[in-house]
Length: 153
Image 1 (cartoon, rainbow, N blue to C red):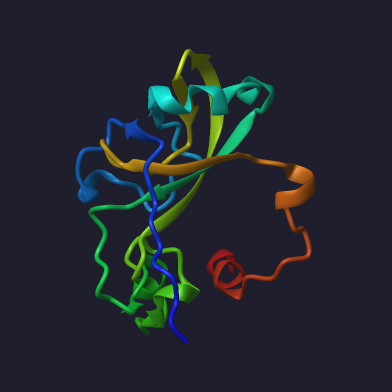
Image 2: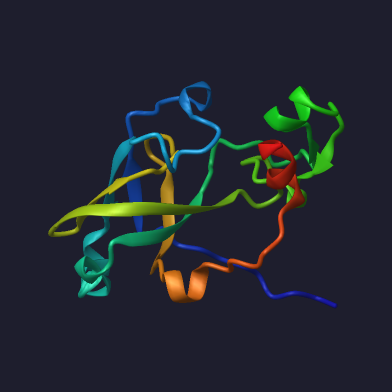
């Protein structure tokens, strides 16, 4: 089956205190890191009403991630089994299409600049899309993730 070409155009760029991959935490949600999302002027109308949300989902392109790796040993795996897992079974930035799913707390909106807390992105990361986070739709309390369940043990 021949698939149609996929194209994505960034809608903005992230500005972060994190400059290199070595600077990035394994998860940014609880770090308190504050970043700004510079949305390109042509997308300004798409921001109308965004201030009504406390949290946003940003789909980003991790342009400095490794794209050839299909298996990785995560930091948790290094501490336990040291066994590799497929990148689709882990949240590693290394993947064939390094699309990142980031949830950030929206702190401020100034024109086309969004200030967010809790992202683990590098300076200059392209933003592909933004969606409001909805606890009613995006939280699945009965979801099972044995990887994180084992980590807490």
